[in-house]
Amino acid sequence: KASQPDQIVVDAKTPSAHAEAARQFRARAADLNAKAVKHEAEAKRLYSNRFPVEHKQTAMANNAWNRERQAAIDARRGAREAAEQAALHSDLAVELLAAR
Image (cartoon, rainbow, N blue to C red; front, top):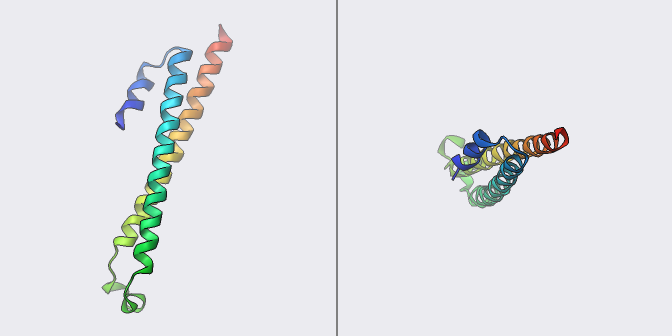
């Protein structure tokens, strides 16, 4: 699924192809933002359920919450990059239409 937008970018040479690429990148950004929200909620749940000793001795901590937090950060970064690509392809579609 992740390679679909990349494949369209290679084939995007017309305004309609760029518009379709922008649509797919916007959908990918929305999907990644939804995943980030889920990871953030899970990280918050895991963090609040830590044992008291984990607050003082971090070496004993279960770092599952930290992995979830990092997954949320990665998803947000991917969403931001997909949104940037969507904006780029929208601009390219407009430029190609204006050049006609």
